[in-house]
Length: 203
Length: 101
Picture 1 (spheres, each protein chain N blue to C red):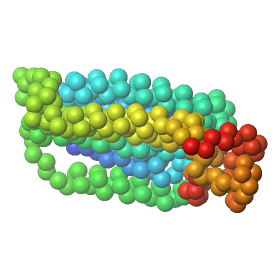
Picture 2: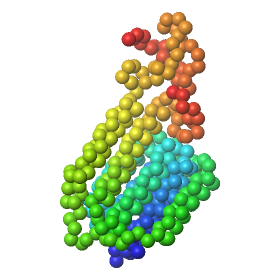
Picture 3: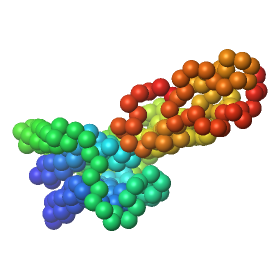
Picture 4: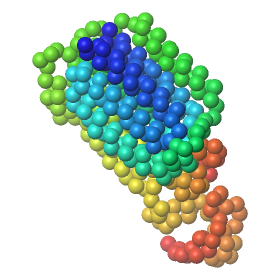
């Protein structure tokens, strides 16, 4: 019975994962990816990893909502009214994907992993907690510091203003005369008027 | 049997994700390909932990690390997309052939 459910959920995860690159709207694509993650989370719950499964569902639901917002910001085809095909090196990609899936699948079929299922009476969530705050605490804390660094990096990368003035200031050449127009090649997309009103704070 | 099903699903997810990461032009869609590959990795970790390792707690720890990698990839990826878009008005990989700021 568990086998049947796991098989159905695996098929669902693969199918929704495939739909990600086949639907015409990027919002639909992100919700399709969310369904794929939810199916994987449900497989986790079925395979006696309730904490990991539920955490996957929660995390991915939020992450895909954020992704949907980004899709609305960046996509060119809001409602999926037109066919959307935006691909390059298509044959190579299909070949790489098929080769990866087939070779991994062959490795699965031709190997004999040990069979040692989780004991039915094991309290896996408590074991995970003791592991996280016991022998593997250093790994746990490293992950925490990594996430903190990620937050700092994300804020700095996405802020319009760097700490020492405009984020692209260092990439603009100085003027030939004091306060003059920048000399030499301009970065693409820049130019325009905004750096004539440059506050000339020489620090 | 269950493990084989789970691992075959994971292999298919990784293949589809690799296709997406290599073929998509839009940065955001490209990141969905990366996420799909991590999804496959997570599925394989869960399967091995549950059916082949006798539930040793380090396996769950590995799954948590995979999830942390997903979060880092999303946050830094979107921050880079925003930074590149501010600088170049570009949201496609073809638009940034050079790395010059």
